Image 1 (tube, rainbow over the protein chains, first blue to last red):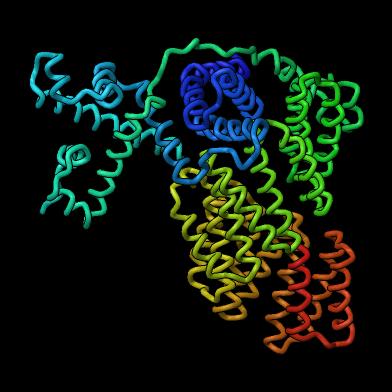
Image 2: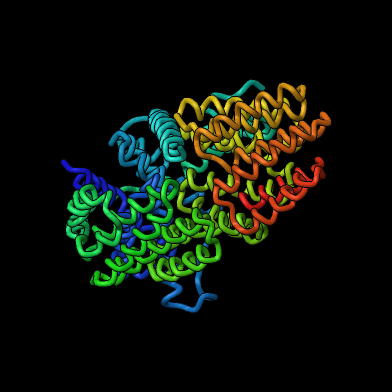
Length: 164
Length: 414
């Protein structure tokens, strides 16, 4: 495999793993209309291909680029004072945490992922989850804690690796 | 209360535990763990973080865009030693050619900035016919950025700023151009610093730092912070510069970047020297010299040897300082660093004048003039040296004259 081919593969992998996440960021955080989201995210990946020689952390670059491309979109489509956006350090830090959690969730054990999704996204309590599984709430709580601990460890590792 | 276990801290995030809450108020490590769990829980409730099914392949063919890059690299390898003018008809007017040439121009910046500029100019010609408008904007931005870099190395600072403006114009037309605008701001900061426009330089470096932070590029962010510390140093705000260098040395962002770490150490050593802290200066400069030597950067080793000799001038016997300066001059001369060697000779002249040996001091001043002439000094440097030459000719050399000349030449080199 040539260098160019391996780079292309790497970008393809990033597209597979991160394009949906970036679309979500653009739609939910920047309220980009659904019909324009694909164009923005694809432009960002073209940008990555162009800039790949001087990008150290592609995942973080993609996140920064999609935020800026979304702002650019609104600069083109609405007067500046109407733009609703938050580019504070705190907000960027939150988005970086979201990025790390996204990366971890893709690797996390499937059973853990399902449990955490049921609890944190679907909103079921430990007792509700226990009765669906015909087990005790204490056991579900234990499982949730174990998954959460493992996720925290992985997120920390992910953040340390990308901040290097 | 003893430190609560991880389990209990985690449970506290969902169901407030008053005893844990009280403990966490006064315990930093436990508070950090609770914050991490809270942030994780918050991120898990955000459906954006959850992976979804994806089509799994790029909606365009990146190979088509860069297909001619590898053939351009082969062509460049064959033409490397030929004059750049002869390349014009050989390289196809495609984006791959322009990229290959611009990467090559960048690699030549330190060794041969004039050739780097000529190559960037040629890339601009090749870009003209590229059909994709965004690709054309990006490559033009890149070409003007390399021109700016080359012009900075050549000392043509106003022209470098003009090239940066042109680059910004093109990157500004791209939806993903903000990162590249950050790199331009960083270069602008270094140019403005060299021009002595410190507030403007600081403003540009701060903007660049913000952009790099936003893109999560901690390495470039660290470079921008280093630039800010250097600006503070140039402004004479030595305490701010020192504090920032120390912070950078402890920063995890430097990580394994040994060269960057050494540059910070080098600058910290020089600042401590200016702050009249010979011990601190010697410690950092010695460590920097060891690493430069390990990395094979011999010109930097020679420069460190000179810096260390200057530290000895401050706190050691004058005979030792003179010996060290003479060794440094030999090394600087061996590496063709004639203008640095001239400044080191002025250091010896200053020592000799302190020992009332005006004749020997005059000899070194004359040798310094020769070194500067050999280094191709410009008109302003010549004006500075004329003062010294007149003083040498009329036996009027004093420490003040030597220092004044030195500082004028140093400013020209900054």
